[in-house]
Amino acid sequence: MTIKPLAVVSAFLLLSTCAPSVTAPPRPPLTPTDIQAAVGAISSQDKTTRTLFSMGHIHVNGRQGELEANLVIAAAKNPDRIKIEITHPWGRPLVHILMDTSGLRVLSFTEKRLYMGQPGDPVLPGVLDIPVKREVLWSIIRAYPVLPPYHQVVSEAGSRLVFLTREGEKAAVMHMDPEGFIPQSIIFPAQETGVVYKDFQTEKETIFARETVVGDKEGNTLTIDLKAMAFNEPIPKAIFTLRVPADFTKMRFSDERKVP
Image (cartoon, rainbow, N blue to C red; front, side):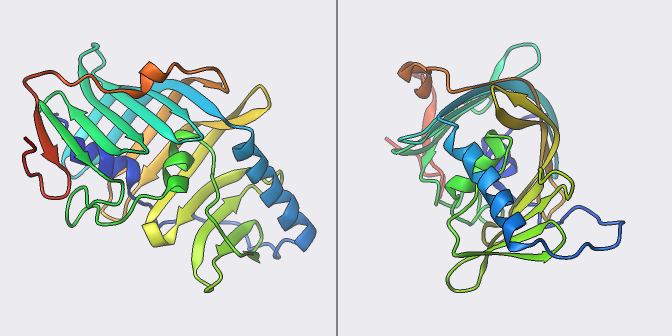
């Protein structure tokens, strides 16, 4: 499969509006005390994460075909910096993605191009016309939900939590394990983005999912299987850079114009 950087970024950032199927009878809504405990547990995990470094494997299944590749992610906060490297199983670099305060850059080794833009730019018209929110990206790379800004939390039924804005819109919908308040999935309706979590592990009291699945309404899916994850270790500044070969063409994401 010839990997396109637009397809990779779209797979990382697009949605699953489908919630996990429910076979058991619906449970009664959570009590205010349980809601507070569940939200507090989710928020505390985010607050304790300053940096992360992970290695694993990705499988993309979409309209442009399938891809099996290796994955390395480095991320830090204050300010937010995210570096993603995708390589062929034999070691050949495919795509490097860098997101920081200066914008979004994607280095495609197969196309010999550097794509540049802002997270809010349409990465591919008709496929990704939405601004990418911080909580969406971190909910994927962190392998654990990161909550959006919200005004109120309600429990519609059982362990389904709905995070509402001041205007009453749904900022996120989270499904949790009713037994231990472990998050199973989170959906961001406004961004049409959702993530499903499986096989939770603990690293120095920080919880993360070994398997994270992202899907979209078109039927595209991306699965991340983590082999290693480390939190709050120092990450050199040099990691958050891109080395662009001299013969690569620079392009704008928004309209793919060539940049001098």
